[in-house]
Length: 117
Image: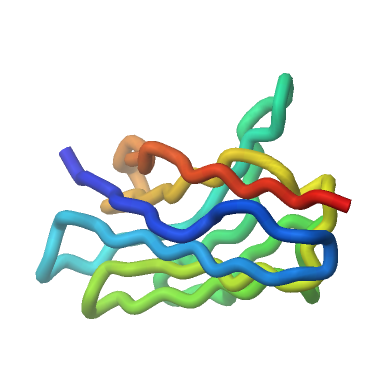
């Protein structure tokens, strides 16, 4: 079982920035995909951004141009730089990883992001 440990998040005013980080416990292995999802109050968990080996990053339309995903395959870490934050970005953000294309998803415990104003 892969453990994903998230850090970052918190509360910020609209227009501000935050950075989320995630580290996987599995080392010396290149994941097929790592990324971030979010779940707002009373909503389903939705994709924010993913970084798949050999492919361009994928972003939800709502965050394009504002969020940037960066992945270090050697360290098995994935970060999400969030800028120009909006109140509608308020959600619990979850780190996600798939060891192979056919693996089950692994999830972090989630980190709260709250945007006010």
